[in-house]
Image (cartoon, rainbow, N blue to C red; front, side, top):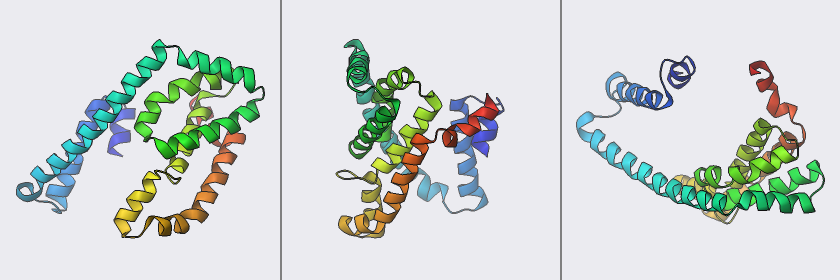
Amino acid sequence: MVVLASYFTGVATLVETAALTLLYAFLVEFRLYRDLSVRRDLGRIGVEAATLVGAFLIILGAALGFTNYLIQEEVPMLALDWVRAHVHSPLLFLLVLNLFLLAVGALMDIYSAIVVVVPLILPMGIAYGIDPVHLGVIFLANMELGYLMPPMGENLFLASARFGRSIPWIYRATLPYTLILLGTVLLITYVPSLALWPVRFVR
């Protein structure tokens, strides 16, 4: 509620909203509930946060550099020309797009994928008459599904570490839910109204 209220009411910018959220979390954890101690935990949390942010900044920096290279070499336009020459149906394009995004989700973290992959697929989606919002929902749904796919399966590795189970055990335990999520992704892909109905109220 702090994030939504401060940003969407125009009270704060996105960066200011992040600062307000940090202040809110600090007051709740250190003052209201007192789950954390300023003397004992604040320094440790600061170091962990700086390490995490630093790691993401390295990833995003590399992804941004790679994206700039792709744009300079006109790779998005070359990819669009290739897809147009080989894929003539929007339905087939959506199927190929899903397979491609699943592979991306299985091999790449979402931050890099947003920076690198979105500029590649956006012109293609527009060329095939796909609403950008629908394309964005397809992208995010496939990324989440890709996090459950080998070889990386980022969410599965996190679950394995958290619950102390082997990766094969996690694969077997999550397989039914992975299939459900796969069906949902296909449903979202081929029934655009499921993704676009909230946008109608905004537009």
